[in-house]
Length: 552
Image (tube, one colour):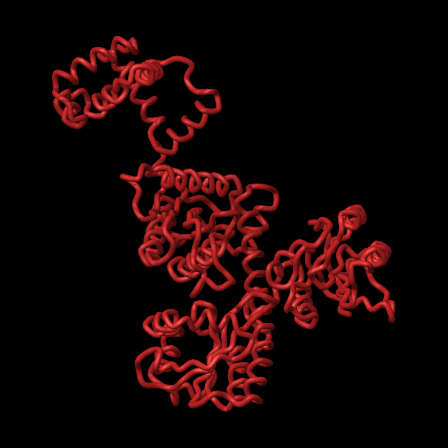
């Protein structure tokens, strides 16, 4: 049993969802706080405390009613049982009425892993200060050295994208590919492609045992073979351990590698929690600062931006419907949510170098950033600086998913909550302009300063208001569209081309691909049908505005 500062129950569930925990029945109360972890052993009947999370290690479905009584009696907001667990409709209703959430420990995960990770999360407190850097207590490289010493060979610990997380000593004694891997902090592209073609990752992630890989034969280059072991947490693959060997490992050393992978899994999960806690803290602070409420000033101070002039930037990501999370499509991180998170982290890192003091975090489906400028810069210059920083990121991020766009708002004092909220709205509106532009004007992503697209944003806002009011009740353009639908004509396009070419009939006719006389006839006919006086400047402007509001 451990007593801790505590964490919200919904935070615990969200941190471990898909990795260790799933909600089997009941509703997770967002106001509930977990401050204690209790192993519920029926033989010992250890007393619970309010806020305890009961770990029911031996419980089955028949034990749930009694567990609910104990949980309610001691004020425990949730209990954990081993999943899968078949809970019938009647029992689910009983769980819902009790107010206690029943969580399941996913297949393949251990109770020991859950206890250690819960202690790590709870000890960080509500704000997660102890893990704010994302660095776990154990040193990754010391862990890699320990594994390498046990196996007697150099090893690397890699994530699912073959990026190096840690490596042991003696890497220079292996081969050229391994040296390139260490220096580049990732497996070289040619080696990665060769492994993918040979189906290495598919076999590796499907195996519960170490996999011997004849690397020289696969890559077509001299070197050493490898032994690889997948790192798992439950059913999720977190990465892999790679050992450079001259021959297959003995059975004893294979068992060592299997056990080592479990320890590394725990290590990576703890590090992920640290990163997630830090990410969530920043997201909460950024959202609060931009919300303009009574807590905004406190959030700005915690972000260390009080008194500084900042511009708000909003990055939107519209990824493809599917995204390959890793080689061979193996289960694990991937998809639109992962793409947003990964791109937001890259943007935050870019800002840390290009705009010291800037802070960025995912707020909903977009990444919001507060970008400060030098104290002696004018607000207009700071907004332009923020736009330039955004452009630089997009230029460097061409290899990332398409659809990345960044809107930049006006520069304001970070200590002015209303000003921050206004800059946030500006950035949102600029981002919307980028997303609504016609394909002919849309590039591969892009950044826009609100001041540069304000008129386009105004047109979008006006179009929204018109749609909310049911559109124009009657207008020349509406009459033209009605006539075109009934008679199969193109009078609306005729007027639109004439207006776009400022009344130049020859150019408008050429753009439509018709004879000038035909175009003139259609234009006269359009004016009659629409009851539109094309010689009236106000009538022309009204028609142009309505046509523009309907255009993408």
